[in-house]
Length: 376
Image (spheres, rainbow, N blue to C red):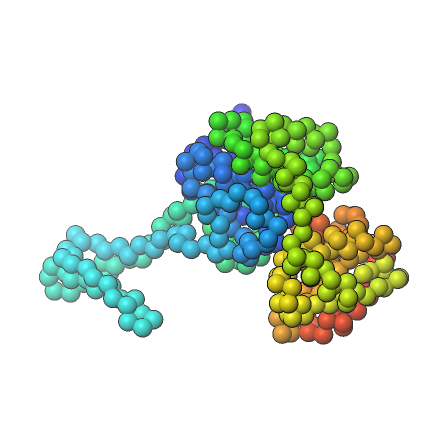
């Protein structure tokens, strides 16, 4: 009799020694809260855990959270390569290594004569990681360069896929996909409690509550269900500080964010037909406000709050000298999914990113606007 996904998850986690946790390149509150919670849970269970994001997590709105030990944007040392020698005919008496310029040389001293090249072989060792957990991604390709640069890893190491999207491709050996859940955090909570309740502490409860509150817009969005409310109440009973989370996420805005919002408002364009409000930003806008493009999702939230007539909100900036990157938010997820199909990209935490091969931001905006209007 096959085990249910939750029991399979428990079995894999219990036997794991070194786990990689993958989140989107531009993670939202749910991905951050869920990954931090899982990392803390594994650390409490004496399991090595590393969170991998395609971009460095410099977002200031995550600073109030307790931070796990290992977070990286690149996977290094995942697999060893073995130089193997058959010593049945000739022993190796000594070995030394030397780096000369870009060359790394290994010198071997045979017991007699010289080494026969036929006694030499090159072996790929197993990956040092024994489990991969992918959070808040509909497919592996959504991990971007992280997946492309390490594709062998995903084929040779078991993958656990945790998501709440209806378009998830169930790409894992274990798929914890619940489209009725508000968030990955809501899915993770009972699963972790089922494995080992004693490893569940206040840090984990806080991180999971951040995921649920962020995904539901502080319980105001349509994806809020009695189940998510009960999960949140249970986490608060477990020590999560709801008021502190809300105060940080929704009340307190750093001066840098307010400066960037002011610059966006001063450059705002309104397209009546598409119900589109958009602004083009320069490098100087980020430098002068001491912000980064990672701050743009919260800027779009503020724009949505300010313009009741708007349906689509967008910022653009040059991510390379020859291209523009658009960050798009809409009043409802159905509209955003429809727009994502126009550009062949995916939605992460109610934010859509799409790249246009056009350095002129105004022309890039017109290209996007025309596509949207044709689809409306």
